[in-house]
Image 1 (tube, helix red, strand yellow):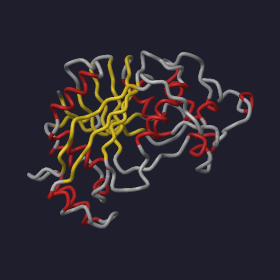
Image 2 (image 1 turned 135 degrees about the vertical axis):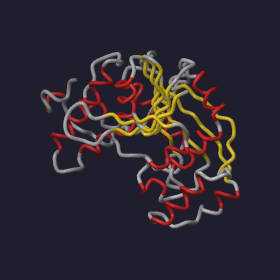
Image 3 (image 1 turned 60 degrees about the vertical axis):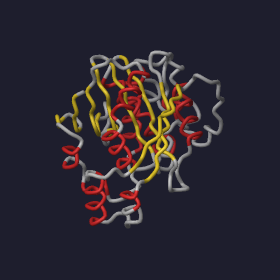
Length: 281
């Protein structure tokens, strides 16, 4: 497997450290810390996981892979790990202590230019449309998690045979963390909004971690501090492992019947005709 930071080739995980922003490690509980540790020390688990997800044997691994919006003016989507092999792509979003992100409905109300945000969203849905089983309308996605939408769209931008996986480390030391059931529900909701496309499977991967003495030495460092970032980075790329990882547990979205609930609270528009030229993609 070849390794990249975004589209820049690197040789080892250690080479990646200089590419990350300075504040990426300003907290010892960032998912990046657990993610890079897992990728560094559990390459056999990653190999096994990719086989289960039916990815080809030879893959390129791209850390922090960026995909620009296809319409409007907005930030690029930064996927934690994009796995690419020929026409196959797998977007892997990593979670550990993060809360649930904003829904599309909430995201659209933020910022000074709502019309531009509609254009950005329309661009993401245009990528998803290629793999959806019916026409997509932005108002139908009001309750979907916005980050999940553009991560899925990024997989579609990269490969003709896309996959999306959320890799969740547990337990989390933060009680505000989105739980496994919520993440599974959100994945199920988004997949159902696309018409349950068999050619675009979604997965949830759970990995149990146990902090080592090396991690306990940094776990109480103050967040959003420059000195913390340097200490966390040094520990992460040092000789001692920060975590011990258990075997992963893989769930394919749609394998079990689940009925999503509670998705109507962030109504975007009342009727499809309300936003002409934007609602339909």
